[in-house]
Length: 168
Image (cartoon, rainbow, N blue to C red; front, side):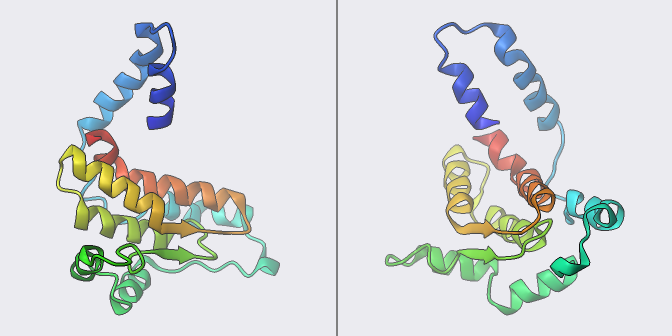
């Protein structure tokens, strides 16, 4: 959304019709508080309704329960306290907050890592919105052999970043 809005704003001629749809979307979304959304919406839909359409057992696709992901992230120290400590160190400040899921599927690990970064670094200010978005872009990565689950992973992350994007 941000990139599209920048393109519109950089056009030589700006017409209210160019941005009115985007403003309507932002105003509509801004009415809701997404901070209490605990589980990944798109991942849930995919795992419970759509995965049979895209599942290929030869590819070895498995889906990790969100509670298991929470446990694993906690065990590896990807917690609010550790993220703050790791980022506040002067040298190599991004090294300890980077996470990659080489077979991310619908992004359960990525969504939860994004949620933790938002919870740790976003304080409803514009400067923290920019910092948080940059931290997520620079440090949360996922790969998969199937394209559709990657789209869902991206959407899950964006849903979690809505307060950050709207604030920015």
